[in-house]
Image 1 (tube, rainbow, N blue to C red):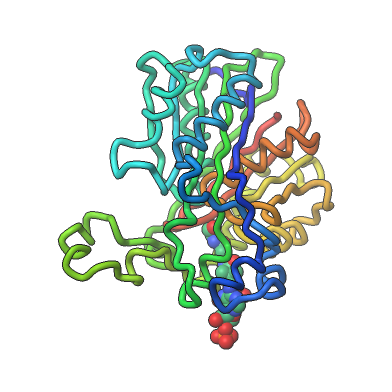
Image 2: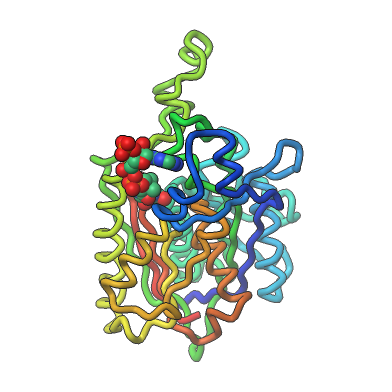
Length: 334
Ligand code: UT7
């Protein structure tokens, strides 16, 4: 078995900044409620006609990651793309990256694990590199969510949280001396599938119903039982981070940087407190970008590297929880 390391990181977010006060113009909400309950101050939402899609944002993040890894697009052996907001119902966004970057017929896998999407995609890429199947795997996570949110007061419990953006990493085979990914841990619990969902456009709610009845807010907008998701999130985040630490004989004080999925700042703070981590051991950027679902950890990792919060050799723990429910963690030496 080989070992995979993160050789390069990248991210891209749309230019259009939407503040909490901007949202208060659209629905009955206010800056104080959003900051207090979620920690979010602003988010990026695509603007009609700005050319941003899940694929195009992912391509920009991917280009940055490939450049940072010191590679050419054609060094990439496989593309793994995580999104729940693909440009097309099918094919997936992975092939759009392949085409845009001119990567000769490399395989492209799409992952649809919502908030855990990047962790699942990273685990797939890690397995490819570990087994020696590929030397370099591009892992992209991108979400274009804002056009599909219910931006009326009816949808305020969901729509104020989410944002758009993309992140990417290149995973490469590590040398014996280098660190890299130590372990990946993935879980799911489908009995909670209805607690955070968007059912419309699935084949159970097919086009006939849409044409007959028009858009049904119960199935065509994301729905979330916020309290229930929150309570499960804090438990599962804690468990899956512990699982990664225990597996590698690591104690919380040894972690240089924990990057939790940016679901809600209160969730991250709860985990930080329970694990006894200092502020400088946890990286959050939800304040600026909101919850970008599958892309959030990839964006945060890239920004953490860019700002020096994560340096080569640092012990980094990534952890996610979301729709499904699915959750997971990755422990690595960056
Ligand atoms: O990323 C995937 C995983 N997702 C998560 O982990 C998210 C987990 N859940 C959460 O982060 C929180 O549950 C939310 C931020 C979504 C909601 O916060 P909450 O503290 O659980 O609020 P709530 O849903 O219990 O609502 C409390 C009150 C309600 O009013 P009443 O019934 O008490 O009069 C809501 O109608 O706040 C009201 N409310 C709002 N008020 C102003 C809900 N959304 C808003 C809003 N602005 N945007």
